Amino acid sequence: MSNAFYAFDAELERLTQHNLYRRRRQIDGPQQGVLNLDGRPVVNFCSNDYLGLANHPAVVQAFKQGCEHYGVGSGSAHLICGHSTAHHALEQELAAFTGRERALLFSTGYMANLGVVSALAGRGDCVLQDRLNHASLIDAAVLSRAKLARYRHGDSQDLSARLAQTGQRTLIVSDGVFSMDGDLAPLPEMAVLARRFQAGLMIDDAHGFGVLGQHGGGIVEHFGLNQDSVPILVGTLGKAFGTFGAFVAGSAALIEYLIQKARSYVYTTALPPAVAEATRTSLALLRREHWRRDKLQALIAQFQDGARHYGLPLMASPTPIQPIVVGDRDRAVTISQRLLAAGFWVSAIRPPTVPAATARLRITLSAAHQPRQVDALLTALAAAMT
Ligand SMILES: *Cc1c(COP(=O)(O)O)cnc(C)c1O
Image (cartoon, rainbow, N blue to C red; front, top):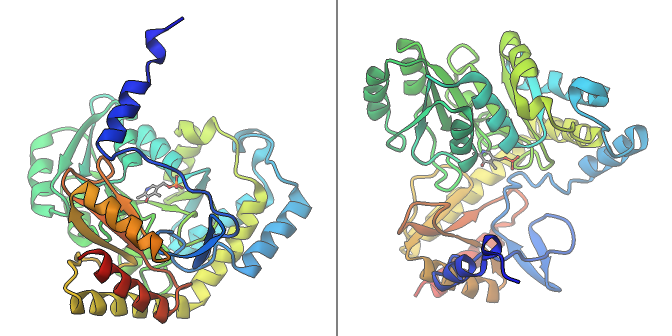
């Protein structure tokens, strides 16, 4: 009995033929600098745990204590009976951390973006996005039913020209640090344009928090901006914070509006309170332990020096995301397989995650790495790319 609806095989076959088929690998043990993959240790150069907090003993301990106090499940959405003292305290600490009036927790960054964009823009509005924005931001604009327009990557002149044309109520949306390129949005110029054209400005700094800025306050702190110049700021907790979840920070009115209107906030179960407790501890470590950012910067400089020495093509990234673009997706996959055989886990990123013909190795550095591991990676990379 065949049913045409379930004919998935042809598309799966096409993906396989084009080397676009994706496989999951199982790791056994915590997320850290060296992972246990199929019983074999591999150095982990593909995680977003930039500060090495995902398995920090104090964060793990806070999680355990959170479970003892709150149990595991939150039981319901925040607006029913799922909003705990732990969630509330974390929101207040995130507001203080970002220098904003209030912050609001979401269950994931994907959901924060869906909720914020669809609450703030709708039919008749325009959502103007950087071409290389994260998929969740693009999906959010589609969900909002506003017109989705895109400007050239990091190009504030193109943004300005488009703002001058729209004639619609407009929300400008951008990654802070671009997830597959590691470069920064031109935020000071964007803030000026948003003000000049009376547009909203929303920044998703998933990869900047913890990494950029003197206290890890991300791209906004890096550029010395604030709530007035960048009114809508999204952060995720699953990357440098080492836990799980996301938040939006901004004015009290913005947050109150989102509590009423953001559907991915209203209609979903709150994070486990123990995750909020663990995050309170990781936030304290992230703010206080400057050495993690310093060490990361030293590793980034070491990687860039080494890459230049071997003639590897670097991108203009000052962050722990250090992609090596190889162009051809088959070649990207082959190099990543060679690296894995040599004991280094580096992911090959292929279209549609990145534009056609820009397949790359996305190398991510972490304060959990040691300089000798970065040196060994460079040697292996140079060998794998010849
Ligand atoms: C990872 C990421 C997200 C999604 O966050 P999750 O908490 O993993 O859902 C959103 N935006 C950007 C730029 C990201 O890199």
